[in-house]
Image (cartoon, rainbow, N blue to C red; front, side):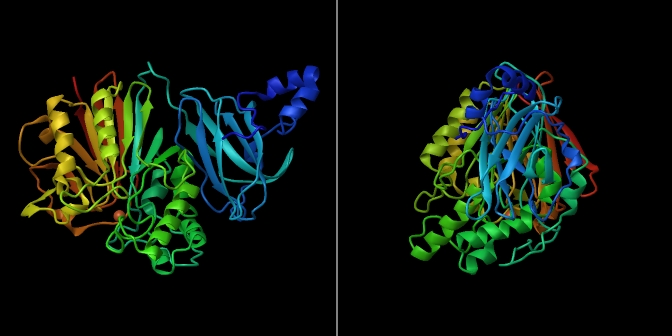
Length: 472
Ligand SMILES: [Fe+2]
């Protein structure tokens, strides 16, 4: 939670006024910098030596955000946050001390809804800071009752546009770059949703899977082209298998002590580096965020609540019951289910896409209940977005049929790795499909009743655009 030095909501002008009349109180309650200086973040040089990784903000609420960061020198830094349209007024000015590995996770509270904040981590001492991180920006959630449009981009499975992913090696110092994300830096959006495989840690797993090794390995990803996209807006992230290792290497229900330890280490590292509003790595990763009354973004965990047996389950009963509740009771105009595994029954031109046990269609005991709820409630305001199978598509949940659940749309994304199966997608089921990695950029417009889906390719150009009417 926020430390006592937090003076969120207190502007620099407030501090000046207070300083004149109540200095002793201010000094007791605030460890922030003096207000007299002129703060110009652009005048401070960026240091990639001290701050090699991207800034990260996430799990936005109407009044708070979570920030995570890595300081390579392991020394305390100053965090400053200001509203983007009022850079002269600081809302946070706080010294932050990293943990033993150099990482911080900070909650910033007392913010205003639907407001874009900028933030930076600063080395040295005010007013003459010696170095800064990248400057990040994050928009808080609009309050209930607001129906402003929102533009969301989605990522999954980073890589080079090849079948083989970018596996990070133990001790690797060279960060990965990706053309898709470097081109995306020219675009804008309100929130980035990551659907999992934010990195490929298989070789860390097979090298012993120490917590410190996972943390170090994250630098190859967050020190690379994520620096082009994550500073632009807040991140809502879930995970898939490769944040720990490939799902063929270990089952989530393993009881083998070494596997349990490595899995715990990988998950703990994810909770350290990702700005999820939780510290305990056994916390539920499934959670949702309401962008005013426009859209509820529902993030699922399709990896660590999976169970074998007859029938197998992709998610826990608790997560499934919660998903059904979100679908049927959301106050928002749209519900966007961000599922790390496809919900569609993916059809190729000559039959079903293989490997269904890893997807909803191979776990009918769970999937059928969602389908039933959709059709019983005629829930035609729902859009699915997924990743995992290394292709780009926009299509129906089923190749044939006229139920709401048959006709419902799903977007699939890959941010790098590609599957040759993409070229064989059913042309009946899919309006658009490609093996190439793309950035889906979806604008939810409650007034128009539409979701406009744009797929940006690795040059930033729009490869496909489609306006989808959602609900009545
Ligand atoms: Fe992947």
